[in-house]
Length: 118
Image (cartoon, rainbow, N blue to C red; front, top):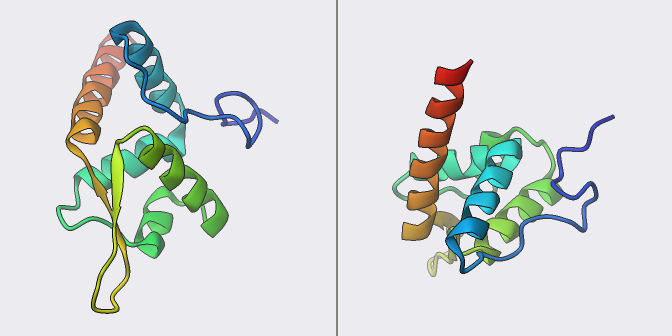
């Protein structure tokens, strides 16, 4: 069975946003290959108010709270997503950052390039 995780195990992943443009492109390519990360970013980009943990789980289709948290933590570690706590008892929400929006645009461009080649 082929693992969807970039480095082949659950300890791997994309845990930081690199400084160099070349490394950023590699990271974006990595996100493009990882269905859950890509889907999470695209879903968050479509939701101006953000997504709760349950909504994010439904959007990525993982059916696993543990997997949803793993995806959210990676995206937050890279600065693509932030978590906003609701002070009045509602669910906290994951929201896309400006950097995250830029990455979503680059992912769309990358997908269009791949589609035009094949």
